Amino acid sequence: MIATDAAVAALQQALAAENSAVYGYSVAGAHLAGARRAAAVRNWVGHQNARDALTAMLAARGAQPVAAAAVYELPFPVHTAAAAAGLVTLLEDRLSAAYLGLVGLADLALRAFGARAVRAAALRAATWRRGTLAFPGLDVPAPPAPGPASQGSGSPAPSGQGHGKPTPSPPG
Amino acid sequence: MARDATRRGVLTAAAAALPLVAAGCKGIAALGTPPKPAPDVTVAADAIAVEAQLIARYGDVLAANPALAPTLRPLLAHHHEHLARLRARLIVPVGGQPLPTPRATPRPTGQVPGTHGAALGYLRDAEDAASGALLTHLATAPPSLAQLLASISASEATHALILGTAARHS
Image (cartoon, rainbow over all chains, first blue to last red; front, side, top):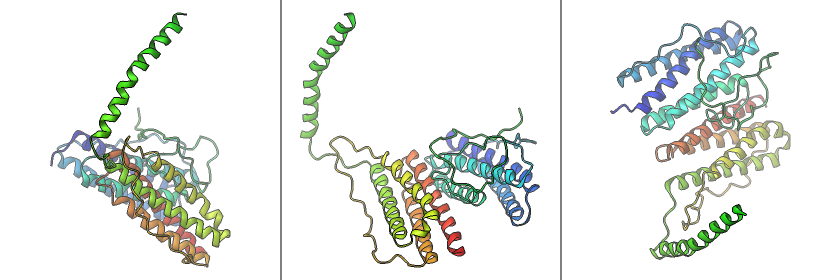
């Protein structure tokens, strides 16, 4: 198979999003308890597996997989369970957007792979936010404004204000 | 003054161009049958039919179970957003055929379950089916429409999740 630049770029975006999700879940898990902690651990393992799968897919295409950063800058302080849930919700939203990039490719296998991953990320995000979005991956809500942490169980986030291409934020 | 003169000049030029445009149109019409709708028009029309049917089902359930409104209204609002976004994709070519007839099956009547749990389960199943139906066009849709379909399909999967949870707790 000819690895197009577009396919490699989209896979790298997905891998970068998975790398930041692995980091983010490890931070969030420390602030969660009970069933939510168990869910965070499950998802953390799942994202490690997804990261490994994407790494292999890139290697098979002769590309050098993007490396994970040692530390990522968090979009807001995470000291409470609510903030932890908000963080992983945001990470899953960003994963939806990254995997949607694969759905725009000409390679039909990657399209189908991307669509499954968008669905999986949207389902995890819905579990964390206890709500749904109209356009997962397309209209990604902005991170919550700094201040008192929200309950994380609110109404569906407003759509129509696409947050552009969300990128994880490795240290500068 | 100078601006007026310019505008007049533009108008004159436009008027001079008009007969040519009209002749061009006639020429296209004379070629024969109008073009078939582009594949993406067919795909979008199919997806619109899926959304319209879901909206109708929500309407039926809400009519029979008004107490479910707080749970269902936010999800229904998403479907109206889906419908609007899909309709915006429908740009029928000039001289093209009218939109393909939606292949929606006739809406089942009298099938809305009466209990809340069963009604929520009914909508959960409808969302699941719609989520799958939208993905059947993934391979043939142009890239941006494929992304829209995948996003809406994922949204409907999350609706099914929320409805299933609500059904278990009702």
